[in-house]
Amino acid sequence: MQLHRDRHRFEAAGVRLAVIGQGKPEDAAAFREKQGVDVRLLVDPDRRSYKVAGAKLAVFSELLGPRLMWRGLRRARAVGVSQGKTIGHPAQAGGVLVVAPDGSIPWAHMSRDAGDVPSNDEVLDAARVAARS
Image (cartoon, rainbow, N blue to C red; front, side, top):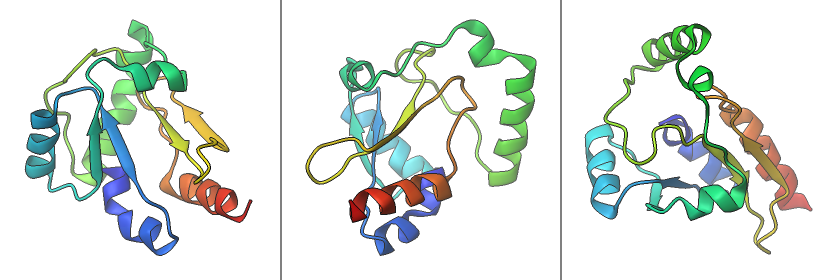
């Protein structure tokens, strides 16, 4: 949802967005329709891309600690989004990669916990730097 809301800023900078989820194509289609998301949604039910990227499986305190719960509730309220049904491995942490046209990865952010998500400004800045390289 965070990337979807700023998709026009990314597009204006020449950045193509893609989000990879753990589910099946029908899960992505349902999510897209329910949330009104207009970003390329790819699926990886075997989580191979997560493993290759170095994304970790979170431990309990990185998923449901009191600090994370509070931060998650504040963020959800601020942006008007609630957690839906979990698809795939519930402890799979995510991340954000900037992939250059040559396939290199000049910038990556692997989440330390469920609330560790870089800002869109940070990702966009990294993509702009990568585009100039």
